[in-house]
Image 1 (cartoon, protein in one colour):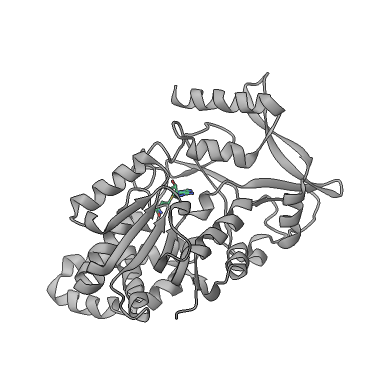
Image 2 (tube, helix red, strand yellow):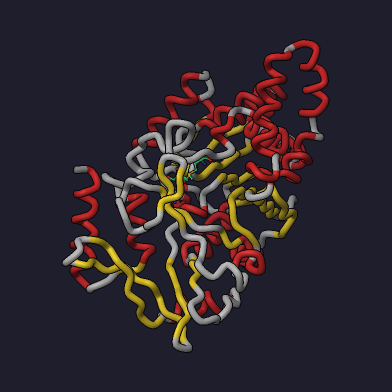
Length: 370
Ligand SMILES: C[S@@+](CC[C@H](N)C(=O)[O-])C[C@H]1O[C@@H](n2cnc3c(N)ncnc32)[C@H](O)[C@@H]1O
């Protein structure tokens, strides 16, 4: 009944103009206030969900990140107030790991930090508060429903996201018969399914295709994300001083839009398996597309940020591990072998090239510091 209702809603939307962009379909599937895959707040990440993330592997990801965030606080001159802003925090597990680590590291940094979650969905806001309350960490929490609630230049610290822009609604394009087309979603009334229809691209799409030089090869399919450019602008304008750290899968334009990858990167996931039809079961499967990191970099730079680092998760976490983690593990080998075993297992999952180490990329952009 759940999905039937969303399905009907999409059918009604399509009936108005005959077709909708895939981005509108995806937006409703993931974020419809009542029926959306994410907005409903049901458990979708982790063993009993549909997919794993670095956060769901355990506390180590947050611990390592916290060591890096702590350095930002130091670089800012240890201010009495600083912010870690996380967008797409889901149930608040990363915040819990980061805050617990900061408390362990330095009482002063921990007292000074304000952990801001940007969360539009009431069901998730409630879960986030519960997660932090259970650990005695909720005093540090502030929740806002959108970036618009944060004044410009109000963030001194870090703006962080893990697997956020891959969940932004994308538009789909295909090159054939000598021109670019948009793949829009229609309803096949006979078969009672959603289907695709190609129409010539509008100016916004053509501009993005040209900006990232997507190969005009017969049959080539790709996704583009108008929302990502706007989002970068919003984030950049809120950062007064510090870093923007974005972890996600994807690549630079030359890694993403290669001639070989001619079927795009749009995928649907359910119960830890890739599903074959992204138009099936609206609201019941995750929809995602690889992130175009070149778009993040260009738009960040357009809004005054500077590129500091672009690497894979493996190299980024090795760098963070050198701050404290490796030394602590040596000590744990004697004092707390059970802890060491647990953290090493997580370390392997996060770092191993065939697990999460290479597929995930980390982009760090920075402001001026004074
Ligand atoms: C793939 S999940 C990642 C969750 C979590 N960061 C993790 O790593 O386990 C993507 C998350 O981004 C959130 N999201 C998508 N668009 C958002 C937006 N505009 N503002 C805040 N959260 C958003 C979704 O609700 C979802 O919780």
